[in-house]
Length: 287
Image (tube, rainbow, N blue to C red):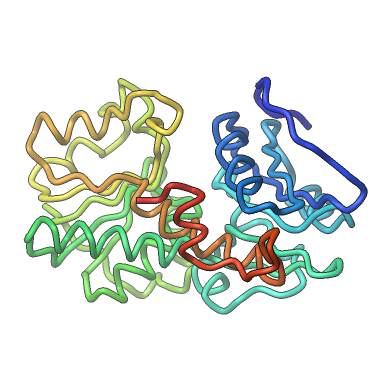
């Protein structure tokens, strides 16, 4: 298993524990390790660039050197990892998506912090924009789509799901126990993009997407190419077409805070004091 090449270095000892991630991002490796080092914790964040199998990843995270892991949406891992965990919280089972795993003495616990992240981002965007959002469509059927369904229904927004492969969309809805919800036609007030297509300058060629964007009021983009100093072409489109855009970082910041509170449970700072939510916000420079 490898990570993107970077000159970053860390200190290890026999008590060091690893927090693994499937993001494969070199920038994430630097960002997270800098924050962990600021808190004085004997932990190392390590990103895997190679594709991983759910059973292989679970075995790695179960090893004695692991504290836990972040699970990204690559290859549907958020859903397929679930059978290989020992305990999974009800929310993660309901959304069929685990994005955080904690290793407590070799027992793996699965959680979902994406839901609170997405809810925070959507509520912030709706409040700031002043727009009346009554209907939404989720584009894509990966791990984030189940979370989006749950959050939108919780917010009282009528929601449906579409994607490039209608068969996979129906399979996802069945997996979530939502096949009874009737589909309805747009235009939709809100488009939730749960795919990585915003990284491509040809994103409008994605099946059905351009039709969803026409007539909508607001767009949420889960993907964050800007995190690695790359262009977010969907954001660019929204600016040019005067659509209210909710960036993925609003979700990311909120979910990261919950994720690290789970991973840091039982840990203290170098001075022996507990790690607070404010400590996480400050060390990760969350805004």
